[in-house]
Image (cartoon, rainbow over all chains, first blue to last red; front, side, top):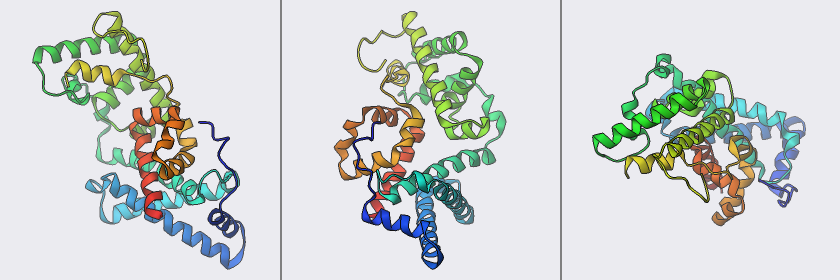
Length: 216
Length: 72
């Protein structure tokens, strides 16, 4: 995304934040406390919005929110110099805490799901995982057989493992990031490439039609 | 939706998709623009394509947009 056309001068409110956080004494302490309070509030709301409250609640949710806010605070203070005013300061700062919430939920997933969850391969669930409605058993069976063959014959071991975990077993992408110690982009790219390979196989073997324009 | 149509939709990839790293790098700028004008998303098709395809990044987008909207 080219943001070169976006004004890079902080608005008045953002400039006040920068002044407080880069200053000294009581004004800086007040700015830090105010920002931390906002980050905690955003983290709590974000955890509740994502329905994490269904499996994380009470003190555990508050602890997770405070951990996310604390880590976001450290990142923000370490990168204050990179804020160029292309957005409001608070929007820039909230991004850190929202991303921290995602990361912490990814790690938290493994506290409630056994690791052998990764190895299970129930291919009959594939139509459900794709959001397909109820259909004929024969159609579902043909689709499962074709996709399984495509996965086995075209994907690398790494792509296959991720495809099974994320698509078949519905392991959240951020949980795989935590498990493999990598980043979201690397997992997404591997799945993206896997989808293209599987589609290519299915087109080459007459299961799907070639698309000539737009997304492929 | 038939199972084949669902599979077709799932396997479809958009060459304009910029990926997680680039999308998250500018998420704060994108969110401020969309908060001010929902049509602004059209000006950044690569980010929009990514958010349409990547569940976790879309969640981050929704979360940041909600935080900004509630703030003002």
